Length: 102
Image (cartoon, rainbow, N blue to C red; front, side, top):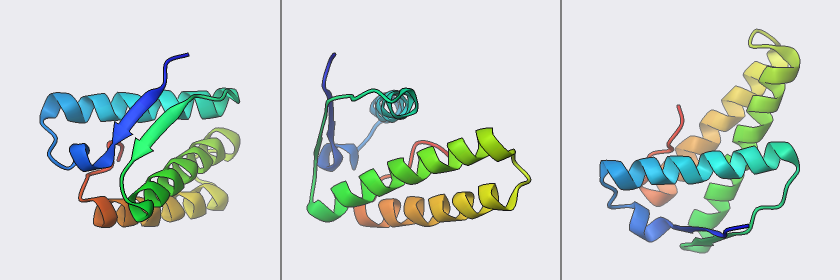
């Protein structure tokens, strides 16, 4: 399996093509998380940027899981969506990179 390489410092100056590549990489990571697969990845950046990136990935998965399990109108889904919003905001503030999914 191919290792996903994400350099958060390089992602700060994204053009549209590179930004869509980041989105595809995050999508691939999330698919692996849902499938219970291990996907090798190498994320470069400051400790704060990496922690924020990983926290946002985990919150994204939890929100999608709640949506699939309980539906969009369930309070648990709304709670997970709010937590995701906070994680995305922190990621964008710490890295200066827009989260590829809204």
